[in-house]
Image (cartoon, rainbow, N blue to C red; front, side, top):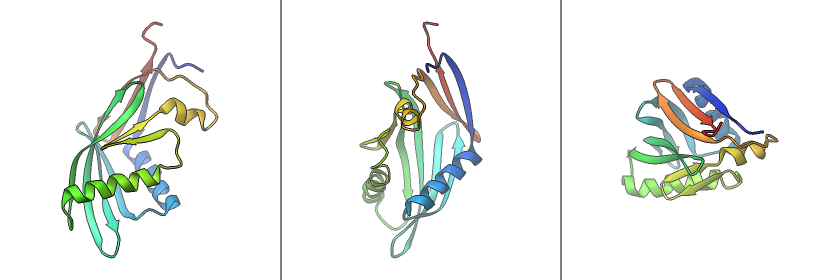
Length: 149
């Protein structure tokens, strides 16, 4: 299957549902997860649970690079540690959480999602021809299309 023209809108509610189900299934150390979508990007806040509760907030900027969806950690607010120390803990935790997911790669402070690989691993062989991703208030948009068609 090859995508020639596609526009997908995913709501904030749907993303929160998916994120919370993923955290529950994976047994992560994050609690009270909340995702907000704004034109600036994906805002994620929650509590990192170790021996004490440590609230955090992040902002992830999204783009398409080399046919993949890339989310870059742009801002981090954290109570309890130095933000730089928590940044490495956060990225290591994300890396551990996606270790078995062949379609997601962690590169520094960025997550790279190969949507074609993600779909293929779930039985949908495709070439999406991603052209853009963007956040709006309350929704995430994915656009795909073949510029030659």
